[in-house]
Structure formats: C-alpha cells, structure tokens
Image (cartoon, rainbow, N blue to C red; front, side, top):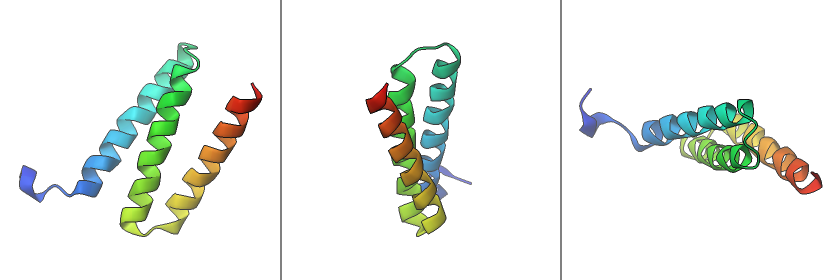
Length: 76
C-alpha cells in the first residue's frame, strides 16, 4: 500500500492508538496529570474515528470514557 492509498481515518486511528499507549505508560510511571492529558487527546481522536466510520458504538464508549475521566479528574 502506498502513502497515497492510506486513508485519513487510518492515520487518525494510529495516532490515537500511540497517544493512548503513551498515556498508559505515563500512568505506569505515575506521571499525573500528564497521563490524563494524553488520554483526553486519545479519546478525542478515537471519537473522531467513530464519527468518520459512522460507528455509534465507538462514539458512545469514548464519550463515556471522556465523561468518567473528566469527572474523576475534577473530583481528584
């Protein structure tokens, strides 16, 4: 597959995945709140993938993740 054949959604999907993995790594290193910031970015990107795919399940799970992370962060 050439670079021209790579779809935008695939690029966003892989960036979101890498961002989330770095968020997990920062969590393991107890680097709070930087891990949370990465999770917010990853959640937003994965939500965008759900929108591009018109996949409501992906959108709902990441909306739920965003809300639970936001409420937890605000109550910490």
